[in-house]
Length: 120
Image 1 (cartoon, helix red, strand yellow):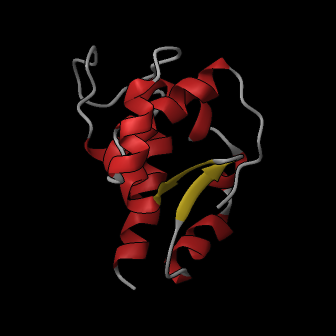
Image 2: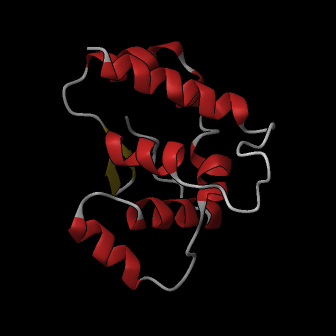
């Protein structure tokens, strides 16, 4: 999946966070060296998960039938598995209830896509 190449501050922060959490040690190492726009899970939820791709039905189909799935925006790339681990398994600090209600539908759809890809 490809999201285009528009990078605002929130997008930069989101990608810096994803790359710091990435399974690829080379990507993670480069991301840890960055000092600007450190980012956190909120940035991913506010920028990446709100992009139209995550609301399209064929997005689920695209992930489910693909052999190698990556999440890419411009030159920034992380594997689908790293992306899902970062978003679904990362502890949400400052969130007493575990999921913020306003973001719950975004994350639930991501869970559906992840589950569909795991059953193929």
